[in-house]
Picture 1 (cartoon, rainbow, N blue to C red):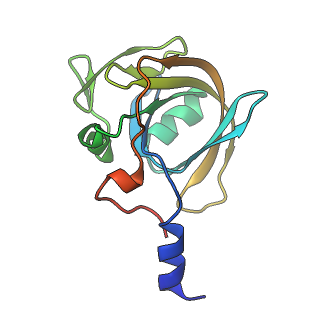
Picture 2: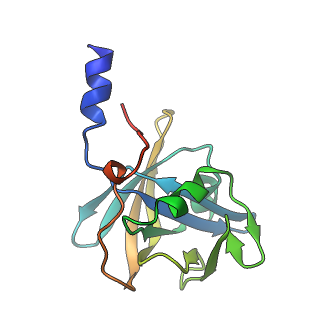
Length: 159
């Protein structure tokens, strides 16, 4: 396989940019994620690829709850805040205000939409990302926006 062609082809996939949050007895986890897809209408299922070394993965694996936040195409700076380790201070997570959702997962106040989910299955084959299957339990759309995609950012993730 031509490694360069593989990288270029995979980077042409259309990927949104989201923030995934969770919490467990041990604390909070939050990360920017891009490998997300709707997987089923009934029940409403999503798949999300998450690094097993990330705090959000550890939290959702323990608590079985997570929230996936949709960002506006104008929220690149917000997405960037979640490239770093999770820090909770003064009612913020990585500098963004949040509240507790119905599942107790952190809900980011500045996200135009979010989905609260229950973890249904984690597929971890020892690769750099695990696939987490989430069932949507609650959905809130505060504002209909053009969603942030990788094409809107200076970043590349994939390949």
